[in-house]
Amino acid sequence: MNNIKIIIGRSNRRLGEAISKHLGIEPTKLILKNFADGEIRVQILENVRGKDVFIIDSTQPPADNLLELLLLLDAVKRASARRVTAVIPYFGYARQERKDRPRVPISTKLVANLIVSAGADRVLTMDLHSPAIQGFFDVPTDHLISDLVFADYVKKIIPGEVKNKNVVIVSPDIGGVKRIDILAKEFGTSIAIINKKREDANKSKALNLIGKVKGKIAIIRDDIVDTAGTIKEASLLLKKKSNGAKSVYVLATHPLLSPPAIKRISNSKIDRLIVTDTIPLCKNAQKKLVPSKINVISVAPLFATAIKCIHQERSLSVLFQPNNTLNL
Image (tube, rainbow, N blue to C red; front, side, top):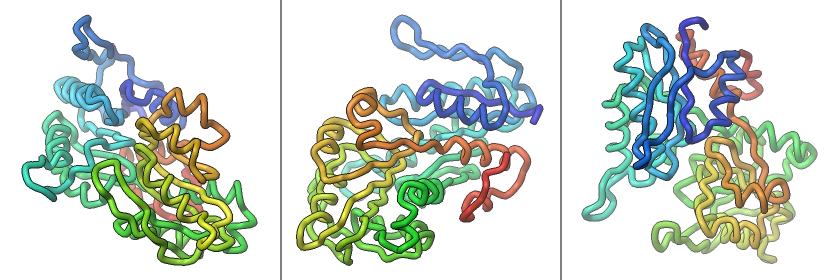
């Protein structure tokens, strides 16, 4: 592992440091701060010539996070790194991935082009809003999934319910049915679907339930929790007397938690929201909802193993197998 360099951006330092610790590698020293006018200043302080460089930076708002990633890529590429991998735990700008109405951008493709043009030879990311986004990058793209990490966690906190098949995996909308396949197979249980009408961006209304959840733990699976409107409405529907879910858990990879998400989650029928650390939890959520409503699990071991596999030119398929040990 002598020829590997790990560079950590400011969007999620804690996750980057955890990944480095799992790999047993000290992060590369660099200058990463802002000039007086807010412009981002970048300088790599170690030699990266001929090295296999992994830059860890999520691209959640503000847009400075994306720009910082681009600048880091450019700096490393110009410093003659052998290969540069953009490790993007949360890939932002993924929700406008098609031209579904007049005069809108395909933001996802634009951002993918920027990342490749800035110098990325490879991309490593997790739980894209749509798996088809992998094809937007003109370089090899590895798409990790967090389902098995969630499955292991759920088995630890409610082992009896899982063993007795007393859980139902719920898709919060018709479009998310494919996303619940892995968990449904892992738990060997049934699924349910919420028929949801989206009135506008960040505005949705749960209409009716397809499937049975009565007396069971309903586990909603989604990739993003933004304003929490969808999961609030879904939890209310699932716990209606006519549907009768015993409790509602939500598994969501990326906790954006934009206002008014904290208030909505606090006042919802959700018993537990389980998220990963691809995005740092906002201070308000940490203060008000951890650990009473929100639990955070780390995907650092998964990313660390993926980075080691890429560096050693090994297959990542082991990361998609149940009961893998994530050996480093």
